[in-house]
Image (cartoon, rainbow, N blue to C red):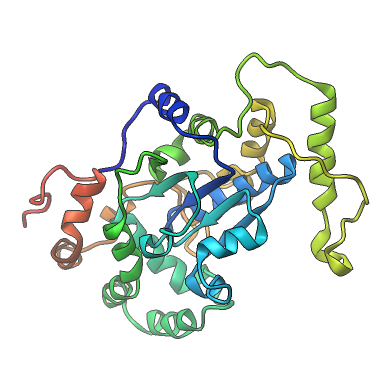
Amino acid sequence: MPSLASPASDLLRADRLHEVPLRVFYGHHKCATAWIDGILREVCLHLGIRFKIVHLPKHFEAVGSLGRLVAQERLDVLAYTNADAAHVADLPAHRGFHVVRDPRDIWVSAYFSHRHSHSTKGWPELEHHRRELQRLSKEEGLFRELAFSRPTFEEMQSWDYTQDHVLELKMEGLTADPLTGFVRILTWLDLLEKQGEGVHPVRTATLRLNRLNHRGRRFMPGNLPVFPVPRRRLARIPRSELGRILRQRSFARLTGGRKRGTENVKSHYRKGTPGDWRNHLSEAHIRAFKERYGDLLVTLGYETSPDWYLP
């Protein structure tokens, strides 16, 4: 079962771990991975450390394994957004965090995303699946989506939720209070300055220069920075800078001012509220889900008994 340890106990756990060079975010499809990736990317750009997002085995199979990819690219922070336990065994010693979501909400979110908004770039299977969803009724489409999303649920079922070096979190709590959540995450990863360290002008300037170094690289030949400013690695980001990053990556900013709970089915950030599955799943859907993944809801703590649904 995911750890419900307090932030204070997180610190005790962190003190017992050896210093490690690698930090890892473990996520799953439709568990706010794009949002979390964006925040981690900004933190790493400001700190001048190496960050990479990996979605699927095809993104590291050319070098042999996930661990070899980390070594080859000398990564400091890895985001593995479809975390499959079968591929993490060869990673070096690391500190990580793992984010899950109510699987019923994953199902509904995936249905709308795959039908309308998710990019199909590099995902030919989704192109066919989208055409199928668009010709089916919502009732039929949700059943089809349940089959299509099977790998996500199986990854969550096979995950080890008792690893001392991995902090277990729920997306619902993280999105409801991002500042508290990311203070906890970055403290656990030892990437956040401690309270009371104060403002240091030189360090603040270095953070800005590190970020400026990367700005516009995708538009420049040879991935060169727009401004040839030096980059200097920093160990930890100030809390004030984290707060600024979170404000820039808020739901309202990412959706052009739309409030959480206001639905736009064609947006990647469709609604942003937990428990939405109750508005879309029929009794037949719920029975089918319970038959396949009912135990997963108990394992994750979203239900307390296998008999959570009795028609």
